[in-house]
Image (cartoon, rainbow, N blue to C red):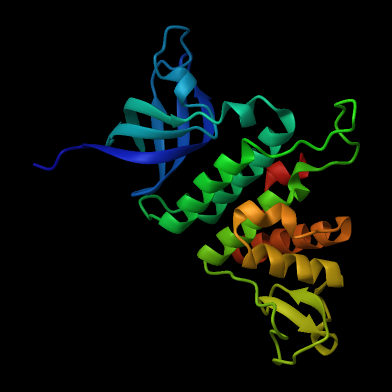
Length: 257
């Protein structure tokens, strides 16, 4: 008889209260894709699991396979706590955008996406050391939006790529013309020339160059792409529209970040 217990490397994406002491976890795992699990008693002060299962935690989980959609956490080893990200408001907001993107783009349970998982863990490692947008006196710069942070824009473009929605940027996605390219069409899946721009998202040259740079460079170099404020907004607009067109969803964390 096959064992009902298994171990997997995972990242906690979301944690929801259940009853008086338990939590429901949504995790992305390396070998098994997205999983749901119940962590029993973790909200009790003496729980040995609670502090290890916070959102953004990178862990090695031992799970007992349940009869329904939820497994049960029976053991957990902390690989990377990422407490530096959770304890800083700006970094936490950036991280939660990434976690929701992973959750919504790859909703099928037991369907592994190792490249997406590896990108997420690399993102979290970089997030811990992400410079905070602050003035000389340590005050957060007014208008600095976590959702426009180059690191999280880069991750989302790469996750779209892994999910099969790589934006076509080198030529017009409708007719193949080399350019100039003025807009982004979610229906065509890429940038388009002026002749096919009706109903598409207007793109600035900074936005197009920014997306190309973020897709071409590794996550660690996202900050060196040189995104302007307009370019960042254009990238976010394309990502948001791609989510809505291809998956029928919008990220709630983006609205609050």
